[in-house]
Amino acid sequence: MDKSMIGDLDNLPEADKQRMAAMIDQLQIRDSLRMYNSLVERCFTDCIDTFRRKTLDKQEETCVRRCAEKFLKHSMRVGLRFAELNQGQATPDN
Image (cartoon, rainbow, N blue to C red; front, side):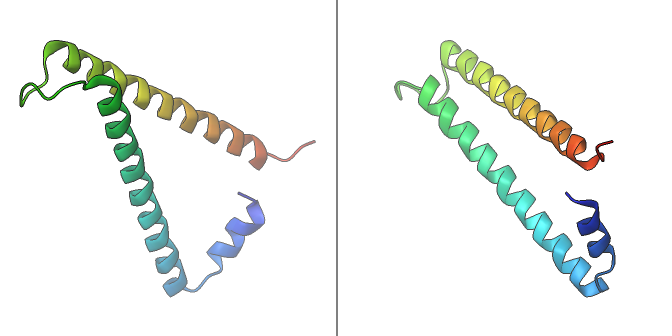
């Protein structure tokens, strides 16, 4: 984010700051739910073949665990990379 934009946000009236904070919270919740739903759909599609029982068998459980770990590691790595890129843009070029 451009530093001039951050300065502009600081100059907003308190009511606008609260509205912005509420919008940001809502966006974060939406993104978290989207990520969770994507994880469930992907791992279910990849790991569950039949509905023989109410519980997962050992192979399905292992697959779901591995799928979730990969998904979360990937998401964390993308988030870190995004933060690095944002931080690089925030520093002025000399």
